[in-house]
Length: 279
Length: 288
Image (cartoon, rainbow over all chains, first blue to last red; front, side, top):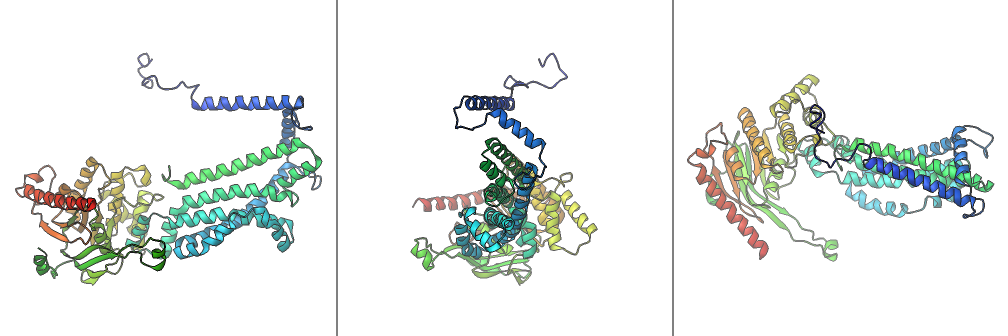
């Protein structure tokens, strides 16, 4: 083959997989195949009544998904709102709560990370509050704020603050001591060292923390909204009250898809700040 | 040997003077450590070292692993305090780190998020914040050219080989025009070929600048090729200076011809026997 085309690319040995059947293509075929099998089983199971009564077949659900995706923005009152509006409401709450959490967590994490004493002193608070379920804050939030919108944001804030705080403090405390030695031998001021060396050095950890926090914020908003009204969580709750399962499945799919997109954004950001580290 | 050293020490022309320096790392002996069974004894790393370094000399410190060479260099750099004794730079005691001493690190210590140029710029900007943009640019460019990195200015460290990274490390240390260059096993992490190549570069750069250099190394050939004086240290704990060798080879030196000098093999043999003796003692101490 190489002999017949001396000017073309060289072909070394026979280990190379063919162009149309490499690992990625196989993985894609497996994905499509399993998806078709899943949808078929679902369709048959629903039609022959294998599942619980009222479980919709795959075709009905897909039709609903198509309908909701093509009619995202309509407004017939709070209990009949297009899924696009609900999605934007959820995203807005997450954006506000998450941004506030990050604005608190990153500076506080840097302060805690710089001082070993602060680290030891504040660690008990963090460790105690971190495992508390976000929903446990709900009654407290409603009582203090007396407003469902603000309570939703408060819950996002309180639950997405911890991973960023912990990761930032960890990243700052574990900056390669050689970078600090470089800074010291140059006689750099403390402030210059913090902004030019410590923060950039800790950036991969900080972004990793922000990514985990975003994941948690997106998990929590759906649960919180079931109790608050409006948003994707409320959409699901409302459809549960209507006992219309296809729309619940549509919402689950859309929540998953949006979570996936949010996570990919942070994955790309992590790569952007890595500069050859942890790769 | 030590008595002989004491008499010719405190030379008035010395640029750097290490005077009776002892370094003790204090163990954990507080109540909490004792209760948790984690208390540890004090460790005397270096005991009573005196050393005078004349301006424009290349001094190598060689000794068995763990003998406190790096500890000594860190004290000169000001990154670590002396427990007893003092270190004078131009007759002024060193109390902390400062840009009059440039440091080259074994693992390069380049900031991975900065390009080659930004790494050097960070150093120059820190030390000379009032430099005009033009002068800054010229200093950076000069030093990038000095170490042969022209064309790699916009690359990040992870895109460079180990040898290239250490060139950046050397350029960064020289760009702040320090009085003394401190090098802590600068070629320790490099393969033999790259190492030889970079040694030749250091020989070339040193011919141009003739700065005072203190370098730590494990390699006898490296010490002989580069230095004017070789300080041989005994094993730790409580490491001392065992002997100081004058290296009489004329400059400029070349690695191909340096072993033809009549004194080369005697010096090499002396260093080898010293290092073997000390290293064997270290290993025997570990077995005992």
